[in-house]
Image (cartoon, rainbow, N blue to C red; front, side):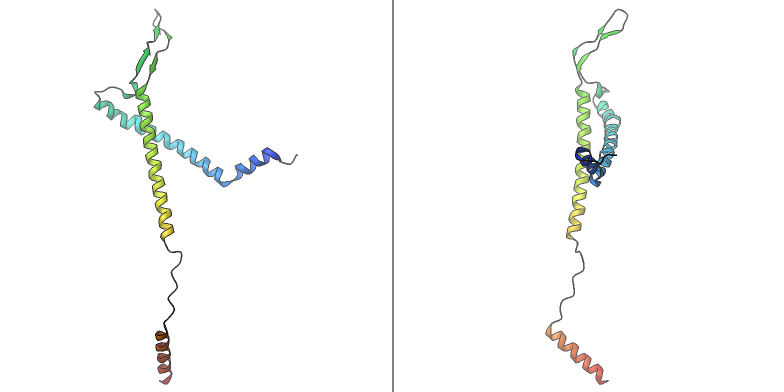
Length: 147
């Protein structure tokens, strides 16, 4: 078998790094979080917004540029052309929720790093005794010897 050289050896080395694996896990978890956020927007927030706007389905808000063409039998010949701004607004809200969650996570992690930097690594060594303390210690030791 031929020895790995050049491009493929470099690619193999790149994939084997821990950072790449951490990034892959982050992307997978981020995708799952995106689904949760999308569900929050579509299934929790938007029904409330719809109720406030008189029961209008928020995701159905659109500006029709060209109506759908239907034949005599009722089958659609050409699809409707529309600007679906309700769906777009829901996507923007979804993005804002994800951005806020990431901001909170980064703020939390920065706080942990700051606390770690502020915490002393080891307790400070006791201060060197003064000349007066050394003299008193010697006197004490001499008095103990006399007993």
